[in-house]
Structure formats: structure tokens, C-alpha cells
Length: 115
Length: 109
Image 1 (cartoon, rainbow over the protein chains, first blue to last red):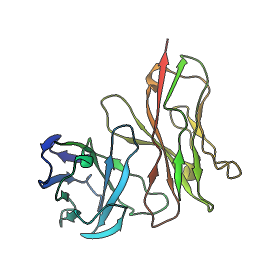
Image 2: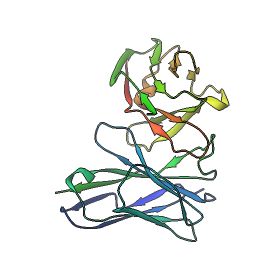
Image 3: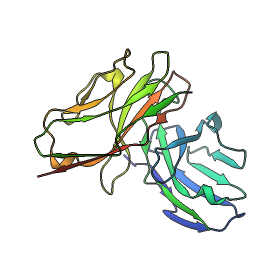
């Protein structure tokens, strides 16, 4: 069983730039969720993709966008980076999108620093 | 607004002492509640779910709807329990998980 993998592990960007983060879901999972975790905070839901369609979105502006591919891997794109976007970005996969019992399997995260 | 509150940033106990990590939530319906854990240098992982009514690694958590709490308990702490613990709420099916800010548990000998 292959776990959730994320790349890159660390990234440094400057304000105004664009960034793409990547995630491969766990084998057998068709759903990917993205979370932002600022320092000292819990993970905050950005959005979820299920079978290549957005399946729910948190309180994030449109400059946060995503994609899911036929193999269920996913990308998170952030345009016009702001200093406050500096955070750990977590990807999580599951096989039961947004169900009450949904069990999330997390990747190790991408640490994004915006200077 | 739906919210999860973990009032303690850090909880330090001695090995063998009882542990209670507090979690309070704000939601008027019947939510599903979870505890996630992150051990040092490991990824965030599910510890237990209210719906499963299970005990994992000696930890249990009881949903108290009257007090809107879902405290995590273990009668005898072990050093390997040292980790960051997050309480999370799913208000209803079709909604995303809402996490608390987390509590660091430190167990020393």
C-alpha cells in the first residue's frame, strides 16, 4: 500500500509569484483534500476533489485553485502569493468523500515560505 | 460559527499519570468527532473516531452533547504518547473537517 506523497517538501517564493504543489493519493483512494496549516494553528480546509471535480471548498479566495487527474493525483495552485500564504500545506486522501465517517490519510506536507 | 476549542496548548504529565486532553465544540446538531495525532517526525494520522466507539492505544473519548465536549482520556500515560493531538469536528455529512489548534502532550519519566 502506497501512502500519500507530496512534493516538494519545502518551497520559497516571493510575494506576487505563483506556486504549484503536488500530491499523490494513497492507493485505492479517489478523493483528495487540501489543508493549510499556519504556524500554531490546526489544519484549515481549502477544498476537496472527488473524481476530478471540486467537491467542497473552504473559506479561501479564488486565487487558490486545484486540479485532480484521472489517476487521482492532485495539484494545488496559488496565484499572486501573499506573505500570509506562508504555511504548511497538507494533502489528505480518502475513499469516502465528506461522509460522516471519512478517514483522512495525510501526506507529510509542503512547507511554503513567501518572502 | 462551528468551532473546535482545545484550551490547553501544552499538557505535561509524568509517566503512569492519567491524561485528559480537552476538546469543546460549538455546533447545535449531532456532529461526528475525531482525534488526530502527530508523533514527532511523522505525519498526521487518525487516532480514533466517535462513531467507532473504539479504544486505540489505551485512549478513549466520550461525546458529551450536554457539555459539547469530546475529551480524550488515558488512565496511564506512556512516554510514547508524547505528540501533538488535534480534535476535529465534522458537523454533518457533506461538510469538511474543522480542526482545533491542537494540544502538545509531553510525557516524562
